Length: 122
Image (cartoon, rainbow, N blue to C red; front, side):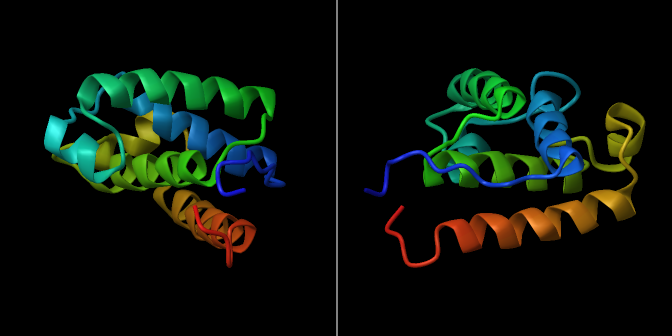
């Protein structure tokens, strides 16, 4: 079933970059309700609540439904890149991941999430 949780085999760094990305929304990043909606959340409050839940699930290594994997990835991509809404140029200072390392990890995560749900209706 599309909503069944799926475990994706992540490296420690891949897991950490997602955790850091989600945590940034509760810190230096500023999200509007509209942006939260585009990322798949109801509004900014839901984004903050869901980021905490997803962050905890990533720490625990819990499987997640496809929609949650995609939300975590989308939220991390946007908070990393956007200087207006996210961490942007401060990403390295606030997370400890260089831009180059983050891009490499995000590309791996994009492939892993896509591969995990290839052909599934999520």
